[in-house]
Amino acid sequence: MGYGSKGLFEFLAPDGDGEGLFKNSLYHTVEDLSDVDELWEEAMPDEPIATLVAAKAMDTLFYVFRPQQGQRVITVWDRR
Image (cartoon, rainbow, N blue to C red; front, side, top):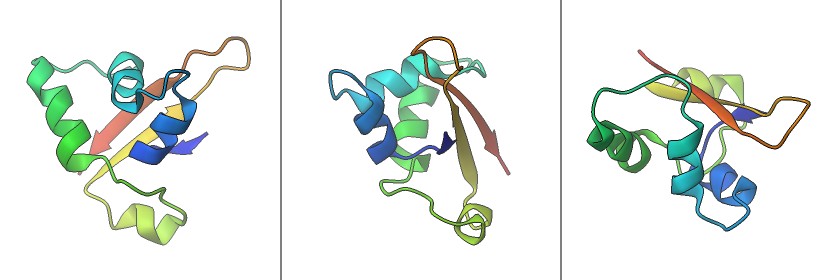
């Protein structure tokens, strides 16, 4: 689907709870749930990342996938 942003998750969430969808979609585990809050608050961009140049400027990227079968959203993240 593309790079994650708060706007994308809010759009994809059936109930509008983008943060909740993000937390439930993380494929890579985190050791402490507060780390997930930190990712959302400090690393997740508000606006969509529209270009590869903009993506390369980010310290943390969120890759958002939706399998062809089903509605589940999967997020994989990578930090430089």
